[in-house]
Image (cartoon, rainbow, N blue to C red; front, side, top):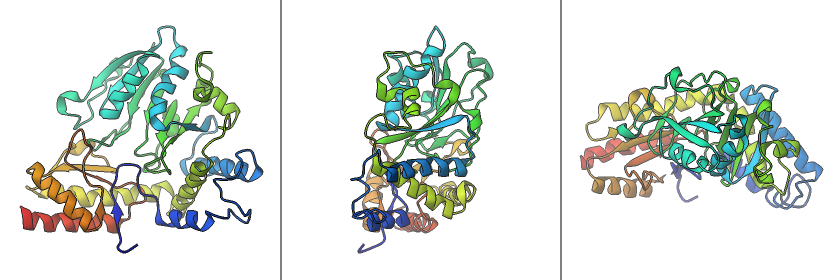
Length: 363
């Protein structure tokens, strides 16, 4: 690299440098086989060791209970927006499914579920511009529903659920794409958790699905085989040729995270990183934070400048200074610093220093 570049992109996001280097070293010859990991069969013993050790390491890092299965599924998180109702809506005859609309992807999830379930949105942050998480009272969680869906971290607006609701007898489903492994989570509170790989897990295009055993048996015969959780669990995610490289990369990321001290250590580092940025936003009259302070994400820090022209100048000058992909989502504009697990504290400090200098010269 001609200069150190810090990638603040929301996804596909940066991978740990150590992981990228190991991928490069093993690219042409996977552990003495003489072939690349992208060339080996998904049925061979070497890949069986990869997928089994990946699942084992995830359980070790997260404390995942034994009655949950770990699935690797095609199509990223977006495919799960339809797979969840296909597999779970049949738990109740009404096919009623409850949704919490707290941002763009939560809204899309409900839309994609609508052909397969009787979707009911029970809270919405639309009136506040999705800058906070609306209160969810237990009375709104109808106990005759098949499941309750939420998006735990909202990348566009920089908000997250700090406390998760108790669904009672209604399984809680969480899209954790942009924060899985970033903080300690009690998975026993959830019936199912899914995450696209491209934030904290690996390359884009697949999803990890963590599903409780009792929720595997509700897919009807019309559910496509590659979206059927029970079939996927039976086949250990090998119903067809899977993305062997992506699962290999997940294992390297999990090994890296273990070396960092595990999820508890990563969570503390994420709190320090986000605190650096939020402290500047709170003291500044030039930068304005988007998310309500009570609901701020540690993964996506969103803010605005006084004018769009200044925002464009900020993004251009930041990129020239080695701070990459800081533009907000095209639908909302502004600035978004995605500081996922691999982002080092030095990268956030460089961004803060740049922001202070930009404020002095442009404010």
